[in-house]
Length: 418
Image (cartoon, rainbow, N blue to C red):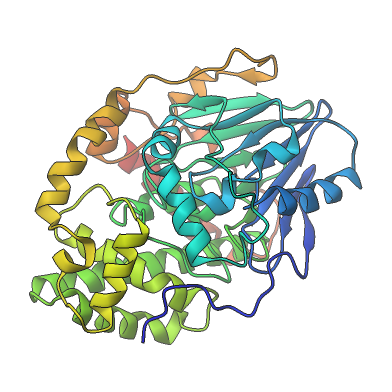
């Protein structure tokens, strides 16, 4: 029987780790929780992702206060999922920043996301107050922004659709550190229920093009060292591509969802079956891959009812995508089309709160590529990764043996973006 809820023995918040990734950059991780990044500058603190509950956020704040009493100036929410956002207010930040697409997803999916999260991972959200609402950002950005944190510039970047439509990554060039959110995983498998699998590998190429020397993934210990970063990125790519291609092959053979699930599980289990959350995330991830292979560009909203139908289908009650989702891919595509148009036309929200530390970096924004024709149409600008945004490492490192291939990969990203 396919399990609907997370039955991990990990106790959320146990085995805390607070790792230094580079100058002024730290990563908080603990069992059963999403990771939180910390950047400390001369003027204040920036937080990357806010934990699932205020109580868990307080645990992070305690670690920060052991290092500095500087105020938390900004929280960056890399995407809309509840396990990354609902602890935000506990940090008492000056600004809560997300992409404009993430804000749009919070508005349209946020309430159902919280309902579903409480059901699927009850232990993680056990101390979440019952009246908790969506943690909305106070400021949003379209593609990129630079924050002067005092002695450190922090770049927020939307590198294209991947884990969700609106993912941000946080890059600290002086430290060589990138906070990737759930766009990259190291010890866990990616959750793909709201993913754009065809676009995700392109975003990973852009992360590698910056040649970070440390990377905080969505969960678990960080990747420290250029080779460890490259391995984490490539492992994520392998999972995403295998999931996408295996599901597409099943659709080409006109297999139903249940048979597709078994085939994709077989394709992934050998390499990824021992990783954290493999069984927990797989049914939803396969359902999304199946829908995408059928031509559904926008992920359908996950509700508790839709999840129940999905698990009934995988347990044998039904083997069709229509039964698992409550509507056909074609019907869902029609339903989702207006929201996609709204995303494309939505204005960027701004805040009336103090934003003196926030610098709208239009030159940098103009240097970033969003990539696919769909993304370019959505953003309205043709942007490139500029050579000066690629970090070249002239010192010997553990990645020397792959430096040549890394450089050619970065060159290829630039060429493709142009």
